[in-house]
Length: 246
Image 1: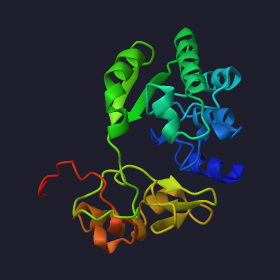
Image 2: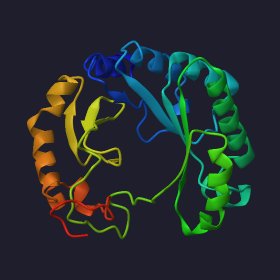
Image 3: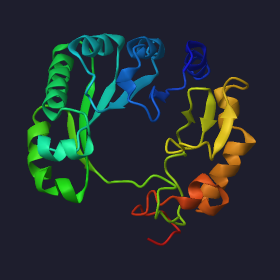
Image 4: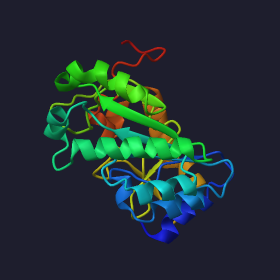
């Protein structure tokens, strides 16, 4: 994303207590500007900056720069407790290197004068259930939170069928492509629910705009079929919503 674009997104929302996640479908640590972006976000005392990462590119130098910049929270995706299981799904990544990077970052965060929350997450899958107990026990001693989270299907994945329920994701969040277009959901990889363009209007104008409010109304009523993106999405199938059958 061009510097002018991400700075405009932040500037448009200063002082609103926003949580910023400067990544979308990419690996956040691959952007060499990340510490600069976090530092720019944290010029606003009400702002919160966080990322999700696989941890592979988290060198000691990057770790120190992010902590110094004021990162508030890092979620590490590490879906196994053994190299054998991990490397089935994270092709090309080295389990031992990733685990070492995460442990080092957690130590550095604790030893710093900053407040940085560290979290590891394992997606619940049949292939890793035999490791989940050891995973939680091990990582709970090293990071602030160790979680097992449900596996979600991406909209428009083969075989995914729509459910008639509201959606939590779009209630308080907005997502941007690198070209400045705003989309309804972080799972929109094909521009099926574009709601505006920050190059042409402010973030708040997009948020309060007719397109987003129309989509929000549909989703509040569980009318996912009225939005192309959501017409093949089963997210939050297990969540209970008042007025909707489980």
